[in-house]
Image (cartoon, rainbow, N blue to C red; front, side):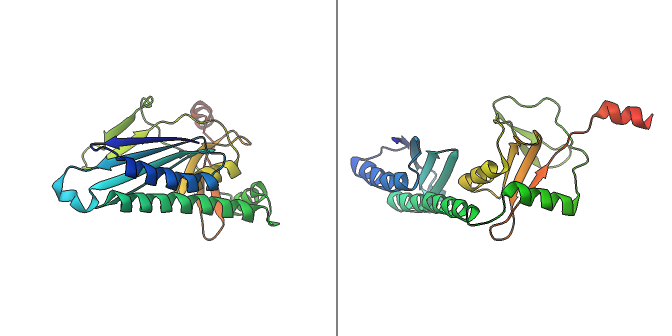
Length: 214
């Protein structure tokens, strides 16, 4: 696994680099298929943020991307916190995969049963005018102080199980993806315990709907 260490607004000492490499050896044991990890050591110059002046960001490239960060008044403490967080995520992912193979029904069957029981579908989705490219846009909502942050990501189709794995990797409560089985834009989300849900969006053909109502 390649290890890249970068300092922002600070110099990373040899002692700190040794500490980071030692931590990443332990992370590599939890993620043997990881190809690269990037560690950013950041010093916050604002004196008002002295309690969180040192920040460590870790980005691990495994089957997906896992990213964590932690701040403290000491960079060694920040490294300890960030390392613990990424370790917890990897262990949780391993536990979920283990539960998947302990006689539990396939996630696809669970999703079908859940969909049949609820019989709920998204009726319409409001679209933005002009999707952003490979950048992030902040769009003010007219007449309000609210700002909506808009992102566009490229993604390859994946199964529901793979999407859940990616959700666990990034540590979010939901994950948007393109379902390789239904070919529909979809989202998986975390429920109680080791259960998950999935929502599929079936786009409505506006021209067809208008002809039906005409």
